[in-house]
Structures are given as C-alpha cells and as structure tokens.
Length: 233
Image 1 (tube, rainbow, N blue to C red):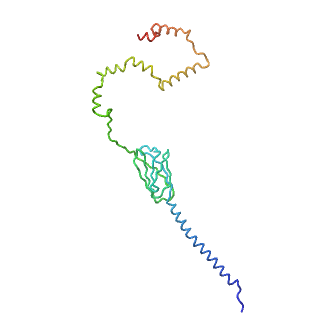
Image 2 (image 1 turned 120 degrees about the horizontal axis):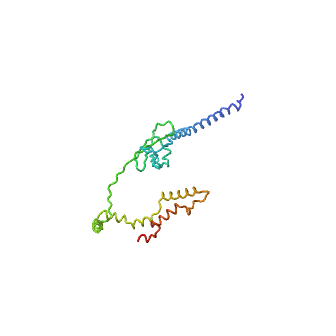
Image 3 (image 1 turned 90 degrees about the horizontal axis):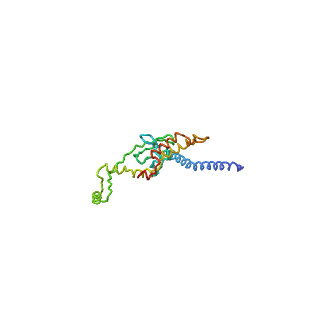
C-alpha cells in the first residue's frame, strides 16, 4: 500500500494559515475603522464661525468688540474692522458685548450642512443713567458761608464791564497775544504771493513815488509818527 504524497498533506495547512492571517487582519482593522468614523463624526460638529459686529442705527462697524464663546469659556476680540473668525461647535451660544451697547446672544444652528457659518451681528445702543452728583467748591457749608460773606462783589454789571474793557488791560493783552493758526497761515500766504508776483524782476521802489510821499506827509501832520510814550501822556 502506497502512502499519499507529502504535498497533499501540507497544502491545506498552508491555505488555513493564509485564511487565518486574513481574518486576523480584518479583525484588527475593524476597531481602527470604527474609531476613524467616530472622529469624522466629531469633526463634523466643528464649524468656522465668522462675521462682523455693527451698530443698529448707522450699521457702522464696532471694532474691538468682545465675543464670549460658551464651549471654550473664553473671549474673542474683533479686529479694527469689527471682523471676527474662530472655531465653534454646532448649537454653541455666543455672547456679543461692546461698551455702550446691549449684550446680544446668538445660538449657532445644529442643522448646518456645511462646516462654515457667517453672521452680521447688530448691537443696539444702551443708555446708562448715572445718579446726580453735586460738586461743592468748599468742604463744608460753614466754610462756604464764610467765603461767601467775605466775597467782594462789584456793585453792578457796568463796573465789571468797565474793568474788563480797561484800555491798559486790553493793550497789554493785545501786545502779548500771539497769532493763531489762521492768521499765521494768512500772513505766510501773503508773503508767498508777493514774492511770486515780483519773481524775475525788481520790486517797485516808492522813493520817487509822489503818491507815497503825499501819504507820508499827511500822516506826519496827523501825528501818527510820534513816540508812543509822549502820545500816551
């Protein structure tokens, strides 16, 4: 009686080994596939939340507005153009706040089909009424009464007007008063115009001008060239 060849005995063992390796690989890959699917589901709950904060009356942007995110328990600040953009969760509550405006809350919808959401948030102005404040120039009523009784008040408005319109005081203020911005600009403009008007030629000389001499003689007769100290006397 002949024995079967050895190949017929080892061939099934090799097949069973390959099948076992394939089944083992599938069993090990199943948890990884489930985990990746779960992570994808979690990522779908995250959205890019962007928008602008504006005023209700004029729709002007409100820069540097404070935005509270409920999911992370933190604040986000809008930029100089009142634009904001951050990552949030679907169904999350966002609180908008700005100085001088009422707080506003917005709930992100949980039925979004995309992972992006834009919003134009409008804030209404809020009027804050402060209590009355009375400012007194003196610490106590007794000191105020004493200072009020010792106060030297002029007899009437005419005396105060005469004192304010005194010639010596007005003259002193006039001499010490500098030019303001408009007067300095006007003077500089006149000088530039005069220099450009005579550009490329000699300016006129009034030494031989009979009209200028007549004005000079008339002013001399009127006493306009007298010394100021003698004129004041």
